[in-house]
Image (cartoon, rainbow, N blue to C red; front, side):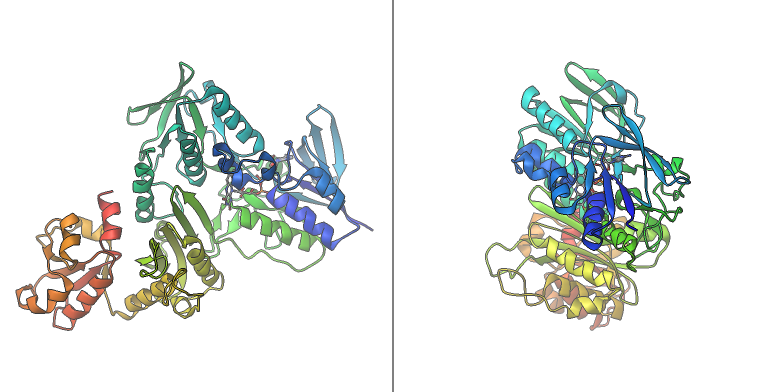
Length: 549
Ligand SMILES: Cc1cc2nc3c(=O)[nH]c(=O)nc-3n(C[C@H](O)[C@H](O)[C@H](O)COP(=O)(O)OP(=O)(O)OC[C@H]3O[C@@H](n4cnc5c(N)ncnc54)[C@H](O)[C@@H]3O)c2cc1C
């Protein structure tokens, strides 16, 4: 007997599940219910439609109901909200936008309702026209507002990737844009010092970036909004976008008695089954297992939602498919830079008390002698056995492939030795014979073997220059630009001739631009009897934006 499968939500998880299930089972009756007008739209492309980078609105609509019907014989019902689940009866209640209400029975139900933009109860929030960015209707509204009202100023509340993408695209439309972020950094998946590289860039692009200051209240003023900050500061905006984060849409699941996790997402097993064996859930609405920490996590990303859609279809079709976890691999374009991350970050590991080491490298994106190379900063997080726990990268070019290489190693529970051994495509326009990913593996091994002892920017910034001896081993020209106050200047090539002038009873910290000459200096000093030496990890390039940025 053919089965009847209902799907709530017709975008990333829901549409993937439907198409895969049809490919596996020609007989199943499959119905998608979508509350809005569109299915299978490109959420991730929405911000770029504002500026016209994506010019054709149709391009945002990856698949349409007719196409799903014609190719996959899927019954797609738009403007149809599932308002209740009756688990005992294996049925749902559907409300059409016309007001019509009816019931539909199921053998299996898949929930993929996604996550809704947060609207925290800030004073005045309901009095203003704060717009959010979730679907095509939202972006149509924002685009129409810009086209018709020609706003001069915009405030984007929230410095996550959606907030940054919106700010960039508003700026490209000539709108003077302010980002208001409550924490001390943008892009939470990055650790502070990696985000600090972005802060400078965003600021240099002409965005008014406000950090460590939340919104206290909103008020209507003239034709726009007056935003009062916790600090007492004020921002006047003709257009206000809320991009504070998202919250799983669990109302249906909760009312149906399905188990909800501590983080507020639906709990599922490896087969993506909820606490009711006939109900499955995928995408932004579920809590996943973090692949590195093993902890429950909310990681609202398109890749996992699509993969889960495929797996749930496999399971319903009788295959033994399992979802093993999410590692949170993510990437965003931030003006001329790209920021990406995978696995666990340092903040997360510290919070969980998981021991770890970190390192920073600042390599060229490709061979330095081939024109056009740019700086590629990598932060690698690993444990003392060499297992890679996470990575972050920021740069103008080649960020995506490096993070993807490391993501593959993390997925396979690989080590820093795997990073060293990766044989990656090389010719001068693309990389170096030792790719930045290989280099990160080598530096990690040096740390684990004790070939170098590192000091990190946080610790150095707290030490008093008089208690230690800080040596800047960079060249004259680099030194002239800026340096750590209180440091001596001895270029690495002169170090051997100055050894007798250095104190043996004090700790010595060496630093250079990116950490490589510091490492050479470290090796010279330690092989000449200096026992208390450390190299500033990532050198000046990590230290400067983190401490002075
Ligand atoms: C602006 C933006 C940019 C993004 N960029 C990226 C990116 O670059 N990379 C990345 O990995 N991720 C990105 N994401 C996140 C990604 O889009 C989501 O992780 C993914 O779409 C989640 O899929 P989903 O199926 O769980 O939910 P969604 O794709 O949100 O789909 C859920 C659908 O369910 C419908 N629905 C909800 N409740 C009901 C109901 N009761 N009845 C009927 N229908 C219902 C909703 O209307 C919605 O259309 C972005 C998201 C946004 C909003």
